[in-house]
Image (cartoon, rainbow, N blue to C red):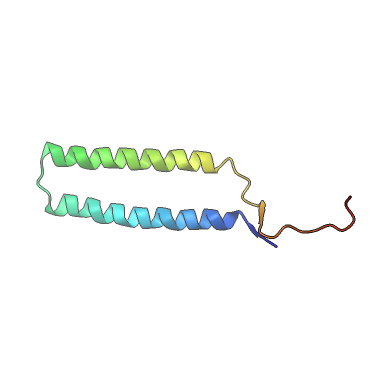
Length: 82
């Protein structure tokens, strides 16, 4: 009995969607209620650069996996093997 490795990928994508929703929420509030200063623009730019870098690095690493592989939960017993 096993599950495809792609289930873990879907959970990861769900986490990325939640991260993006919180990011848009935070950036909106920084723009809407923050002062228009160099510091505020620098913080928003720094956050976006770091977030995009992390997502691109993760996408690069995750593209190397075979997502069709099966994770076996219960090992199958073969009575004919010695």
